[in-house]
Amino acid sequence: MESEEEKSLHIALHPVRMKILASLTGSGEYAAKLASSLNLKVKLIQFHLSVLEKHGLVNAQYGLADSHTLSRPVAVKLFALTASGLDVVDAISQLTNNYLRKRQKEIP
Image (cartoon, rainbow, N blue to C red; front, side, top):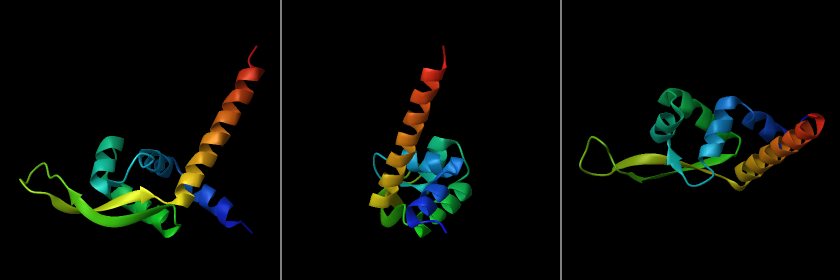
């Protein structure tokens, strides 16, 4: 049976979720902005954000964002990494760095 850490890592290792988590390392974002920056559909981003939220890797709160079409801010659901999400991003980064270092040593 998987531990919580293994389950979180398994959830995060999906390619789209990895991109989302990497995009959230700086600050919170809303789904439409993530979709635009990752060149993916909003519905796809929303689905993966809900999976990440369900597993405690991101949390959401409502906030205001500038609208490109309106002259006033609009209410949006802002997503940010939780402490667990940040731990998972760090673990993936360490695994990647260790792998790359190992590969560099193997190349003559």
